[in-house]
Image (cartoon, rainbow, N blue to C red; front, side, top):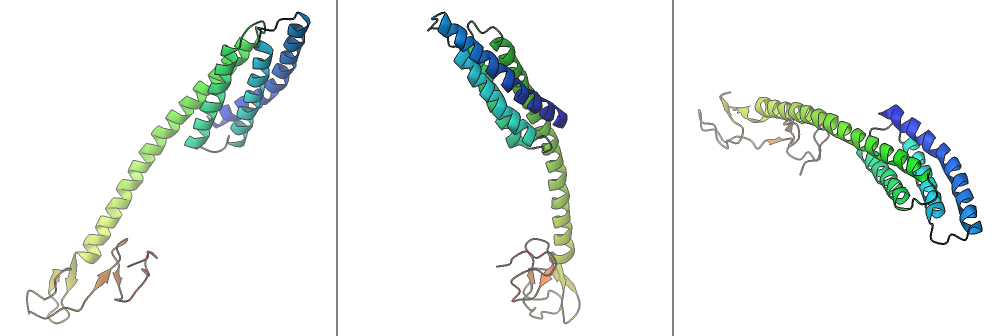
Length: 196
């Protein structure tokens, strides 16, 4: 889909020149024939500038997989197609240029759907991995601790040892990675997360 953006962007910018020239010719013909009701010449100029702007955006974003870029292209090409179809008159080629804009809008929509699917699958895998890592750190570092007196394994939130009754020193653990912290630590030395 990246190559499509580049190709459609360059073609749209080249078409800007052709459509603008044709639109000026249609405007001259309409003026000579005193055809005041035909707006296809002005519509052609709007389509030409719409394709120019969309072409610049497509060319600028051709290497990036961004949902925002795809949405911008859908809007720009879609509006350009709508303007062209709404203003067709004596300028018969306006239907062709509007169809090009519509095809580009559809391709941008396909690109958006494809990016959304791959983005969501990658996100789910990453979220699952991070969740497993945090849970593993929690189980390994936070859920249990050792009594300093009798060395029995006890729950991390215990205030007294269940084996010997010793009052346990206060302990803090990182909320992000589960690493044990000094009581007055403002940041975790393991992951750098701010504590508080």
